[in-house]
Image (cartoon, rainbow, N blue to C red):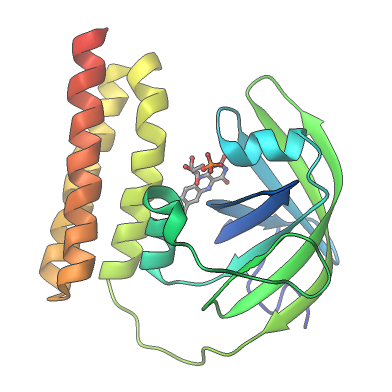
Length: 209
Ligand SMILES: Cc1cc2nc3c(=O)[nH]c(=O)nc-3n(C[C@H](O)[C@H](O)[C@H](O)COP(=O)(O)O)c2cc1C
């Protein structure tokens, strides 16, 4: 299957979960992906994280895991030890169990910038495991949006307190959307935890600056 048919685009980020292995270490993290031509994907990875270190440390491949499950996005930030890895077919990095589709990739080039790297991936295997048509719900996207904002917060706390405050305000809105659009106690507790942790970062880092 073509990467474009899976939804990858040159202009709009596809939000995925990237799994990667270097030596005996494996990791999973949500990462936005752009199409970079036939069989190619492009990542922009900011410095400071494990994925960044593993690419620069020489990881040769990775898997782009395709899912819209907010719990998998949440676990790959807050509960990494609960992520269920399964073997891939053509690369050494593992897949994450329970996703719709997998793109197994080899690292082609890495370009280093001041505070990020751009990684060009060559896809060596695309496998679709199913999923089908589903109705849209507001809770999942709101949780994923809250996670994006949560991961941006530490950076803005050190460079722009006004923007950090705005990020926290938005996380409150996303939490509100989750609590109004689902009765699922797991999804609600995830949203409340993201808000709680964000408020913690805001209060403790502001006190220490
Ligand atoms: C939906 C979503 C998309 C994200 N996309 C990126 C991205 O493209 N690049 C990046 O550096 N961080 C991105 N992040 C933030 C990382 O996932 C986050 O910083 C994570 O904690 C890094 O994990 P690591 O330290 O294990 O690499 C994204 C977060 C979410 C929730």
